[in-house]
Structure formats: structure tokens, C-alpha cells
Length: 109
Length: 224
Image 1 (cartoon, rainbow over the protein chains, first blue to last red):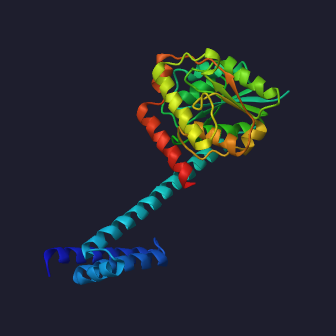
Image 2: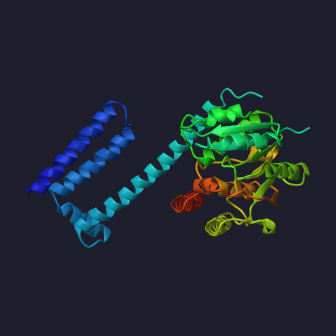
Image 3: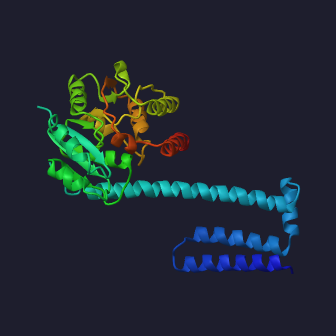
């Protein structure tokens, strides 16, 4: 096993443990736990058996296994970025509503 | 007699808010200042000058403050609402003209334009920014107004109740135009004179804020 494999496996294990502990503290739901578990399992399997990526690449019609990993990662990052953006916008709006209600609380005709 | 309320959103405007309030009180029954989380004495000075003051606990930006002001004016029982800038660039006569135009009864919304009838004494760089703002507003919302970024607007109670503002910051000016179009409000532009002092120029949008505002508008338009 190469050094990079050991590091990445450690990261995956750490990520998985973190997800489980968050689930047990109920800070994430079951659906999110499943999602993260699948993600880290995929990372672990590609790291231990790089052929997995090549097989996936053939299946998807992409040249190399490493390319599949990069493409999928970028897609996933974009998606997460979008969700984060939407959530921040929502929160901005909620803060404005809070500030508004507080400000107008004592306003009378 | 209809109840006229002037809304003045203000963020750190202690130098000019007092005079703005005193002027506004000449032409309205009530002046509502929304202190948008200022760190200076804006609230005290506005209250001392005779305004009703509400305060945001944290700074929310122009759009947030205007939304609060309009909602507040409705709760105060306003029949007509005019918004004005706190930096002293709008004269009270302009607010009066907006109220009077609404009283005529054939329009729901009034925008005070600094560009009508050759009264545009706007500095050249402002005018360019102005044009870009108008053009973008037109492209996105299909309505040409000569001063889409004007801070002087008037609306009837019915119009104010229908308008929904979602943006927190500067893009609110164009959002008003969007709401006017979407809700099929009858719009009139009236000529107003703006007073440009070094102070009011220093408080306006700078280039970076302008770009940010434009990007947000475009994003909203295509994500909503």
C-alpha cells in the first residue's frame, strides 16, 4: 500500500466516523448519513482498488479512471456549492425578517 | 384627509438625518426612520428631530430597511407612502410632489426621476452608472424607467400591501420595478431635483457595489 492510499483511507475513515457521530448527536438525519456513508465507501473502494475507477470509467464511456473521479468530484462540489448558496440566501432573508419583526414590535398607530 | 407617511432608511447618517427629517415633516403627517443598525447617533438625532424611529438590531442593507419601513408605515395606518434618502439629496418638495401625484388617483406608484425634463444635474460618472442600471433593469424586467435607481418613490397603501421585497441590499431599487411589472401597478415618473453634495456622492454606490448588485439581480432572475 502506498502512502497516498494510507492517507486517503484515513481521511475516509475519519469522515465516516464523523458522520456517524453527528448522526448519533442527531445533528444530521438518516438520509444524510446514508449519503455520506456511500460517498466515503466509494472513496475507500477506489483508493484500495484503483481498478474500480477504471471499470466505472469504461461503464460511463470516459477515458481513464482518474478522470471519472475528477469529473464526479467537480459535479458534486458544484452541487454542494449551489446548496450552500441557496441556504445562505435563505438565512439572510430569515435574519432580515427577524430584524424587521423586532424593530416593528413596539410600533403603534 | 389621507395619512401621508415618509419612510427614510438610514445607516450611519447622523450628519444629515436631522435635516432630512425636519424637511420631511413639513410635507407628511408622520416620518418613519428605519435605523439599519447604525453605530452612530442616527436614531437619537432622528427621534429628536421628530421622527418615529425603528431600529434593526443588525445591519440588513437598503432593501431590508425599506421593507421594514413600508411594513411599518402600513402599521401606522398610512394611506400613501413615500421613501426618501437620508443623505440629504432629496428635497421635501420632491416628496410632496410624489404624494400629490398619488392623490390624483390614476397611478399606484411614483418614481422620482432625476433625469426628466433636463433637470438631470447628475455628475457624468453617476449618469453612466445610472444608464447601466436602467438598461439592466429593462433587460431583466422589460420596463424602461429613466431613473431605476432613484431612492424617491411613492406608493398608495394598496400598492404597498401588494409589493413583496425579497432583496436585502441595493438591488432592491430594480426589484421595485420588477414588482411594478409583475403586479401590473400603474407607474408614473415625476421629475425631481437631486442635491449633490460631496457628502451624498460619497455615500452612494461605488463601482464594486454596482457590479455586485448587477450580478445578484441576474442570478435572482434566473434562479427564481
